[in-house]
Amino acid sequence: VPRDASTPGVSLRPPELDADSRAWLDRLASDGAVKAQAVDALFDLLYRAALSEAHRRRGSLPARVVDELDDLARQAADDAVTGVLRKLPDYRGSSRFTTWAYKFAVFELSTALRREAWRERPITMTNEAWDRLSDAIPADPATAAESRDLLAAIRRAIDKQLSPRQRDVLVAVTMLGVPIDAIAERRGSSRGAIYKVLYDARTKLRHALASEGWELDAAGRRG
Amino acid sequence: MADQLVRRVLGPVGPDAGCDGTLELLDELVELESAGRTPPESFAAVTRHLEACPDCREDYEGLRALTRDDS
Image 1 (cartoon, each protein chain N blue to C red):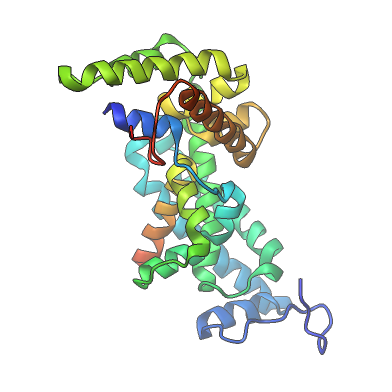
Image 2: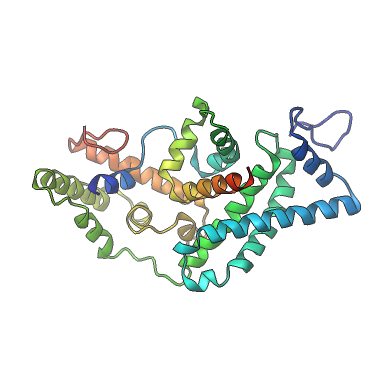
């Protein structure tokens, strides 16, 4: 992290920072009561943000999680404040301070919501996933045959080309709609690490389909 | 429906910023878009990741909603 040579230990402030962002930085970088008040204000800001985001998503959450939204938002705000203070030297002013700080609140809140929503739900690779493949075949006979062949090729490639870990992650995320965060928690891993498993699985699948003669464009449409 | 499923299973093709790289630039992307500016080419790997990762996509939508409420 670049430092201001004239004030050792103090991060160099981006010169074009807007007044509000500069005020946040100055207050959070101060000492004593000013800093304590700034941290309290930051918690209030991020708690309101987390609660707003929680309510935006409430329609997709189980009732037992909806009942806990306020507590989850408070905890997320608390964790987000810790994250903001830890990362403060990295803030370069490429967005407003509040937008940058909201990012921490959204991440903490959404990770908690996904984990809570799936806490009591089993993640099993049942036939349900394959049923969804069959359900996706269009009724139109003109396109049904080709879709059926492509979906069969995908199922074959998933079964034969992917490792068990890649298969489980790919099926759970893309067919069963399991959040990556929920899988990461159960496996003691991170969102980024589980996403990498998904990315590698997709790459293998595309290669397998290409080797069978399927010409798919970047968006997965048949060429 | 079949095409949607195929797209979801296979994901987009091309450089992908990953979850950490995307989170790093998410605030900047959201502000560029809310200002009506087209993100530069250097954001292509981020926007592609948002097509590929449902969790990061949901976070992106959350951040967009919050900044909209702010403006």
